[in-house]
Length: 190
Image 1 (cartoon, rainbow, N blue to C red):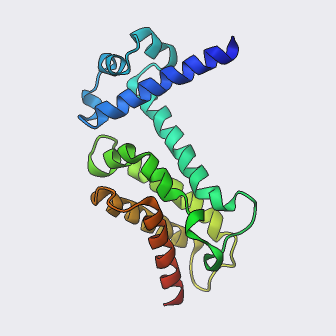
Image 2: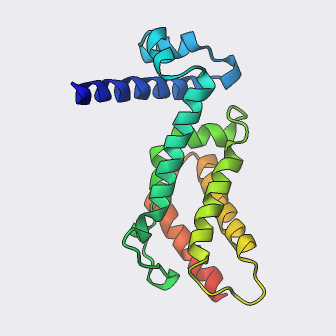
């Protein structure tokens, strides 16, 4: 019985999140009502209020889920506890672009509109924290502050993501991973 209930909760929450995402493609969060969300999700208001007090709480949970997936995607090459060096990093190990492609609607909304003000900064802060984990494994290069290096790398990756979005995802995630790897190798040896 408990497993059935958990599945129903997950299904209801997923329907609400998908509905909100669909509505965010059309208008800003402030213009969206709870009634529109539940109608789009094909659930009743009681279901919404059973899980969330406000539409912002639904959005926050949706964003938290995506950021958890972002972190998992970024850490994929490091999951076995080994440190990854650019020299032995391969395209198939870079999963961040797969993550972005899987959540293309979300990233398009935050990149192209003011619907989710502040989320770009939140994602960049998360990317910066992830970069810090990586650069802390290495000996600090002479004269380079690791916080600045982490920030530089995070915003460089975010810049690639933004450009990919602006070009309407015309490249595959594999191509983008290959480009990132090539850029990392190029900048390392130039």
